[in-house]
Length: 281
Ligand SMILES: Cc1ncc(C[n+]2csc(CCOP(=O)(O)OP(=O)(O)O)c2C)c(N)n1
Ligand SMILES: [Mg+2]
Image 1 (cartoon, rainbow, N blue to C red):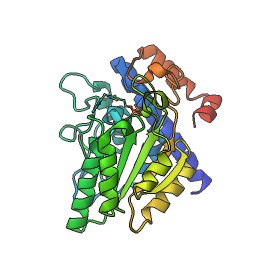
Image 2: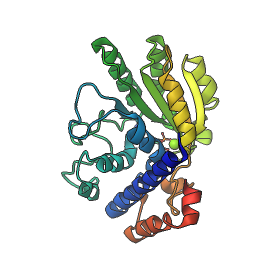
Image 3: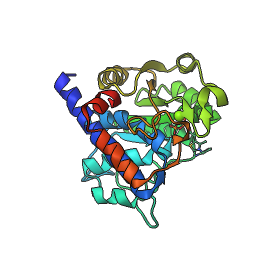
Image 4: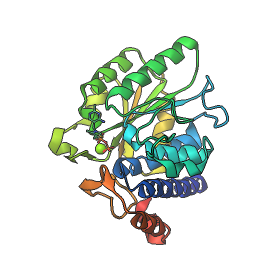
């Protein structure tokens, strides 16, 4: 990828990050940690890799994303709004009564959401179903899946791991958002998931591990995964929970925290300082 393209993606990710912080700040509470750790991967997927069309969100021949850690909805809503799936003004209705943007993703409410998620573990099964259906229907499109590292404590993840490899789902590219934290502590203390590479590899997946905030690294991994002929792919993303919001970054309380609107705006302003850009991206 040319350096110019990387710069454009970084600038876009900064916008998406600000929109996400702003939306959660406007509501006053939200899953800011796990939303901000996936900003770069979502930006890369929707800006460069996914064949989707905002004017026809349900078209049959399209790539799909299942964000199994459905509590990261606000980050996905920001990129979908930016792509034009719905008006940006909707972001200020996040999780309000009657909203089309509930805190967890709902495919029956939000244009561009391909699967309802929030009950951890289930997204992998849904993604496998989509991948199998695509194969049966002769649809040559990818299904992308994002799971959490804490979510990887769920048994369903490993049933899915076994099934996807058994069915040789090379049309499925999954990511683990390895931000090292879950709802009430560090993953390695609550239930260690290591050795993640070895586990997915043993289940029969093509495994890569990259910096989940580095566009160049992630892009190379995705391009390799897209060429895989027989195996499903797992790309483990080393990320930072709460990345880019000074009050949330690496803070164990960031899972679902109260966010004051002025503080959120301050965080957005700080992202515009040259230092913060370097640090954040
Ligand atoms: C089946 C199920 N059990 C529990 C929860 C409550 N819950 C929501 S998020 C979360 C922690 C998830 O941790 P992780 O996957 O690491 O998410 P992230 O760090 O990306 O926010 C838990 C336990 C849930 N949503 N679903
Ligand atoms: Mg986590």
